[in-house]
Length: 256
Image (cartoon, helix red, strand yellow):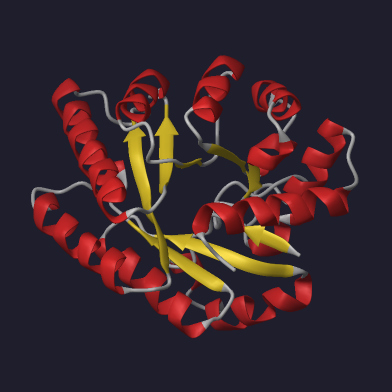
């Protein structure tokens, strides 16, 4: 059984067939899915899917690209959902994204909102799902500042050295279809070194479909490709990788 630990079924690209697609997952060896929110609206949608499908769980949070002027009010709503909805198992997707944002003041605001959500995770005892794009140094600094919170750096793109430090802080590392691309040398180095009991698989659907499906809409139907690639890199049986990465996700997100 596979656990797709990061998939955005709230995206409009699933509007035409969302229910049919999600209903098909258990028949395709996908036994668990976690849908993180990126703002109040998508967090609410994530909770609604988790309430409808027994194998879907939710995370709620404010993505760095979705910070608005009312983020303090939004964070209060996120807190209420995290505290009252039993299917919410993490604060996320949160973090830093400097790929598009070049303004230093806007980057500083991302850091403030990320830190506030780390505080929330610590307060309510839930892990975080961290988005880190072109912001490795600052993401790591905030993770250090809130040592003890724990969680996962999703779609991990950092160095082996960064991975070592995050593992020391108690984080898990999760990987998308990027690891099947020809230029994925850094991620492969991290997977080769990191212990298998700290790795997870994800699709980040509908984005980043793995080879040989690159360019298509991604979905949890393709999460098996990440397990296959990790098995290849580590010289393991793919069934063992499926079992261990699923147990890792269940352990992190408190799923029986």
